Image 1 (spheres, rainbow, N blue to C red):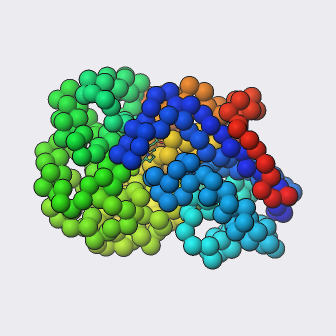
Image 2: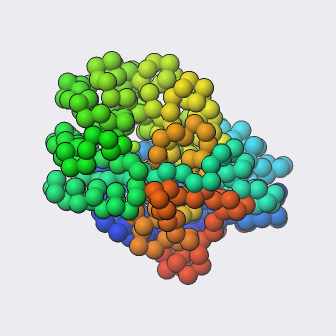
Length: 368
Ligand SMILES: CSCC[C@@H](NC(=O)CCC(=O)O)C(=O)O
Ligand SMILES: [Mg+2]
């Protein structure tokens, strides 16, 4: 393949309801798509983070600069444009995994389309549909939380994840357990909101039989997560702390991580995400596919990844309607608590021209 053009398409899609986490409240999915044109096929991808660096250090405006000034010049200079060649070409740039993932996924999409191969086939998917969990934000009252959970269960979601923070943890978990029973697959995500000083408090979550507690302590602090795991029985799951397969191997070796939230964008793309899956699977550590409120452009490839053998826990791969009244692709619709694995070439979806036009804020060439 030969790179001919790369376009950045900034989109802003309103959320159906505010999504509050321990680090802020989102009301719009405000990010960009990459559209690449090569001599043999086109490719699409989505940048997974937001305008502010609150979940991780990367953010929309910064990623555009990193792509335009540092990643694209190196990739465009490659004698052969192919997914396998990208990581070595981008490796000299430190960090910026989400920006690298956006470029790498667009190239992978184009490459697979040129071969007529689906991402699911390429990655080694073994399922045609995957069970869908749902992430539930922090609500103003317990009553509103219980109503939200009731609604998601009625839609068929098979697992509930509750966002927690100091002051909103034991009570919402207890309320959900009391209302929906001990058998409901239930987990929590703190997004780094606690410290080791909270260990005794977090140990009180052990009575609720949670599947896991996600990223309770500050990111990249594997030692503290390992010490916390010695004091609580709820399995610690890492998210923000794992940037690649190497981190995953270290975290498992230190017993800092008994479950892995695999987010392809966070680890630099789908090839590294498969490596993370392979490392965890080899150690008997279950993985599940995390989410970043993706549009269908990011949701489709996540579903392909979630169909790999080691993804034994439901992910945050919800239906498009979880966040959007209208998606920029054909919507992903829950059927019996599952979503279909895309099987068309590449990521298997393209933006729908009309919704894309309506939700586009601006688009420009990053490379011609
Ligand atoms: C704005 S919160 C984004 C990161 C968060 N993602 C989710 O909670 C799932 C979001 C989704 O359903 O895509 C996480 O830390 O796991
Ligand atoms: Mg998380």
